[in-house]
Image 1 (cartoon, rainbow over the protein chains, first blue to last red):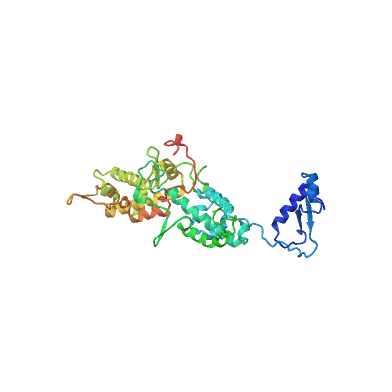
Image 2 (image 1 turned 45 degrees about the vertical axis):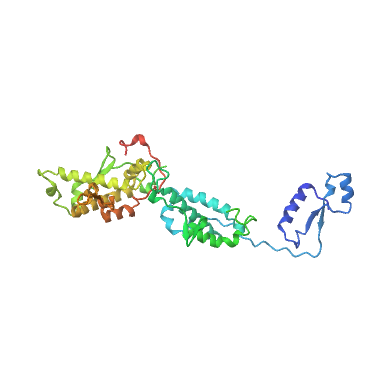
Length: 202
Length: 172
């Protein structure tokens, strides 16, 4: 069978999703190793005759319907289930914290893709922990108790840092808040599979 | 963006409990209400030197001044105008202010209360500063708890609202 360029591209995308064992409906792959490929390439190296599609008739596994859930909607109520202390600050859309929640939930969905976790409850909990972690850091900076973002004198005794010390180890990043620690504990096994390279996306 | 309707008065107003001073942008307790609520029925006689209530009225002003200053101590300088607006337009803030000022009267009658805000903090006997003196003593422990519980001590505002500075002193 000879395909036009568009069909070849489409078939390539489909074939990217499959494992080494072909399934019916996905049992084709594109190759340039046809019988006359060498000669055709010599005659017309830019022609589409150079591409062939190979269809495996047997053995082929039966098609397996996808069991993957669609990405669930993530809402404020999902967040407040895990982060009760902020309930009073997120009563309605006019709260100062609401735009922050919306922005952080968008970022959290980028960082923590549902396709990685594939479970709605776990995914929502991890999103909530991620958001709560950055909420705590943001609230700390909003309070600005050391007057860093103020023209008032800087208050050295109130200069809180976002670090936790355990023994001789200084914990940073997600380990600085209880929310971040819970998030990291849950996310660690999934993070290995996120974006190919460990730790790059987070 | 305004303060949400469920917590907003369009303008500060007077009632039988408090009046609003547009020049100094603050609420002041009315004397009769304060005496009745706190049980300090002899306040006028106690403070008066000439039989009038002028000293007692001055005391109400002073309670208001110290209460506002205590609340202002929690907010950075850049928030002070917004704080003035919020205190004069928020239903919950008006209620909290009333409670705070009433409690300060009770506290002042017991232990000197708000006047401790004006002590020097110097032990003349030993010629040393008393370093642990705190503005909290001017409102008392209960007053401080009222401030915390009603959100008057928060460093930032819960609602994102705009203010019109050109109307300060006129409308608020």
